[in-house]
Each structure stands twice: as structure tokens, then as C-alpha cells.
Image (tube, rainbow, N blue to C red; front, side):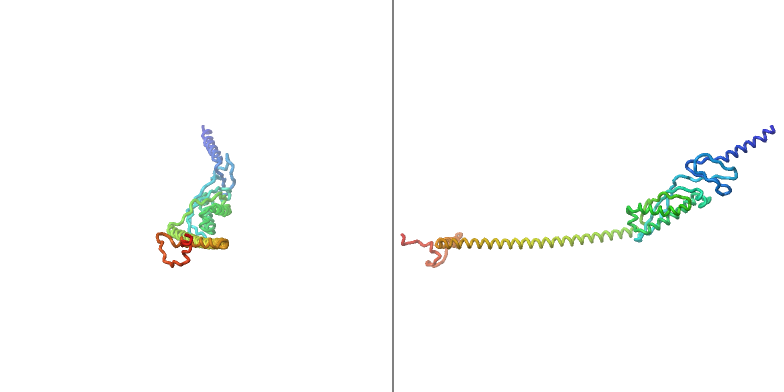
Length: 290
């Protein structure tokens, strides 16, 4: 009985010591074995592991990809249009030994605060080197890549690998919205006025060209008509001259008839002329023939 009394506590202590010396590393984490605050071993593979009870301790760190939202910050691009940028980053602990040395017992909260400082600094530097139009356009993908690449080298000193950086939202500060909208309206109105002025100038050029073309066409038509009329008059005169030369008496008779038709028009057939006038040569009766 007395022997059992002594053995039972020893067995309990042994079992407790054995259990406290065994720990399990999950596939989602990595672990450090510390002895008096100094790193003794690094456990990166999942499974069972051992440590010395009471003397050594195990510190676990998440091995998954973590996400970190950055507090909105104001940046000033090259065109001095301040923007409020809301971003986030994804990262993972790549070297837990260096991570432990860099952040100490503070762990992930301390690391994330330092990561925030790095990302805010890189964001201000990169976005401050371009215009606001570049930030708001499709070029922002290249800007995010530049921010990530800049943060990678600095975060490596913390044992952290920055995987991605994204700009979730890019807005104007509330105090600047109205003035910015007014400036944008003024710029659009100026552009519209320039377009209208250029349109009026182009219309004036087209109108002047059309007027000049009209004058040229009318002038050419009148010239051609005068030439045609002159040629027709010449041909008519030639015909008359030929006819006059062929039969002078018939020609005089024809011209007299034309004169009668022009003089005796309408209901007015009264003319005051001397009876001996040559105008009535072809209207006189030949009394001798009767």
C-alpha cells in the first residue's frame, strides 16, 4: 500500500511530463520551439513534435495567406488633386525565425502595424509620382504592382512575403468634391466652347468654299452661254446673209412680213404713216394689173 502511494504520483507526473513534451503542428501553421526565449527549433512540417517540458515552450504562427486592410489615407498626385485611397494587402509569414526576431513577443499585431507603415509609405510614394488620371484609369493595375514590389523588399526584413496589394477605392476628399466638380464642369464647358468654335470655323470655311464654287459655276455657265449665243447669232447671220444673197427680193419680202407681224399685234391695227411709205410696198394693190 505504501509502495502504491509513492508510485501513483510518479506515474501521474511521468504521464503529465510526457504529454507536455508532445505537441502537434497543424498543417495551417508553423511553430517555434523556444528555450528561455531563444529559438531552439523550427517546426514547419505538420505532425507530432517534441519539446522539453517546463524548459521549452512552443510559439505557433499562422502559415496561411492573411489579409490586411490599410486605413484610408490621403495622397497628393502630381496634379495636386488630393485623393483618399483605401487599399488592402495579402501576405504570409515566410520565415518564422526572422519574424520572431523582428517582432518579438508582439507577434502578428506588431507585424501588421509595421506592415501598415510600409504599405502607406509605398502607396504615398508611388501614387505621388503620377497624375490623378493615371490613378483613376486602367493604369492603376501597374501602380498596384509597383506598390507591391516596393513593399516586398522592406517586408522581407520582417520575415513576411507580400503577395498582393489592391486599391479598393479611390475617392476625392469630401471637402474637395464641390470645388473639383466645379473645376471639371468649367473644363468641360471650355472644351465644349472650343469644339463649337472649331465647328463654326469649319462651317465658315465650307460655306465660303461653296459660295466661291457657286460663283465659279455660274460664271462658267454664263460664259459658255454667251459663247453659244454668239456662235448661234453668227450662224443665224450667216444663214440670213446666204439667203439674202440667193434671192434679194424674197429676203426683202420676208423681212417686211416680219415687220408687219411685229407692228400689227393684238387689237391695235391702226398706224399713222404716209401712203407713199416703203413700209406698205407689199400691201399696196397693183391697180395696173386689174
